[in-house]
Length: 439
Image (cartoon, rainbow, N blue to C red; front, side, top):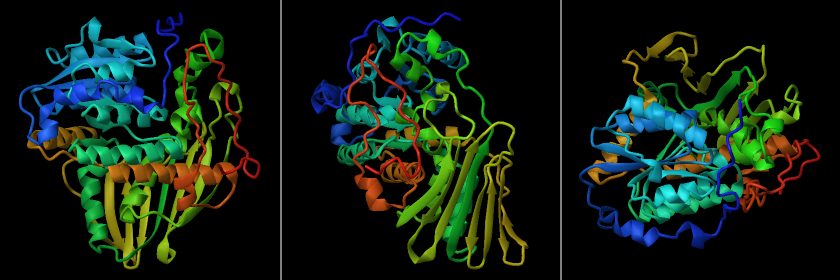
């Protein structure tokens, strides 16, 4: 397979400069006056789509299904081949709702800003999560409602930026919908409502896992057929902590978000963890680990136990168990099992509702809230759950106890301050517990 050409904007910088991020913001806000006066929008809503990979294309598909009066107006990605593949899929799925001519197809490291400035009303932020804080900040500065795929950052500086942007979104009455999709799952909602209503008594502990196999996600992209360090890392983004946060933060964060949910989104006191890189030993796997185990300590002796693994030929499971003073709640989302038991093991309740697509539900509710003039804002919990996962990674990478305050105040910046296609970007070292320092 031939490697696509590096985009022509080879010298474009991706900056944390607030001046660069808010450029055009006033014009965009004036062009979207209902945000300023708080009135529900009428007419066709224009969607801007940033990050055209598989999950992003899925999110765009669900957004366009949310109501009839929507149009995909602009798309942006660093690679043209990904954008074109995504556009073709969406055009087939939604004939007449994809209006993205060549002049609104933006390629390069600055594509996100061009999408935001193209006259859209709603922005879908679905790039690798290392870019999420930058794109979210730019979109809110320009007065745009945002759907953000999880997680929201890969380091503490990114988390702090997201927290600040959430506050700005609230001031502007902007919608912020998070891709922590289990919070929108009807069965999960009823199950958690029952637990929080006392179904199994006081919640004392949660055990959750996100264990699966592993294979090379990007077999067509190896170092020898990618022209620069940056292209290689962006093509294989999942394997680099600065881009993905490691699989704990990028994927298993769903399990950690459910732990946060049952404990009322109150932060833990501290966590400690173990993990490593047992089989991902080749350079093509970047610097992420392949297994994690973490214990989160909450007030009053409550605890959350998390396990995640990505190793081929091992058993897989994605379950959540909640232990209360009067019983136990078991969840297996893959098997659609949601039930509670008393302390003698007798089933006391089982979910029997119709299954619904949680991915579609979140977009349906998001766009309905925008139309109503009362936009959803998931900002506080999405930021907190993201930091919970980052906090766990810090504990595992360093081998130290990490408190919530340490996680919030960490000065470790993983995402480079500026990016250029031709820059030297060596693979970051693999963390070594007991050697890697908390910063």
